[in-house]
Length: 120
Image 1 (cartoon, rainbow, N blue to C red):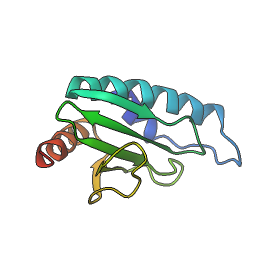
Image 2: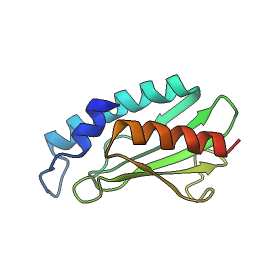
Image 3: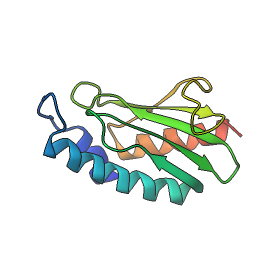
């Protein structure tokens, strides 16, 4: 996750369309986050296609609990990832919002693991 989190903190060019810089970030973050989720025990991972400077999706842990995540527009909101429990891959309302720091790999992993434990 280190490279993806570092890339998130960089400045992104603002544009009305998807920039090559954003597309490269999306690909990197998707790859590293997917690997991290698999290490954590995720059995199902669905990450949306590149949108407009954001990312969202769903993942299911080995416990059966489904989660929704979202990173807001990375041009302006690069500090946190929203996660919350979900009933399925179309539940965009879900449980209470929790925020995971994107500024540091250790904070990210610690807070993420804590959120998974608290939901059990």
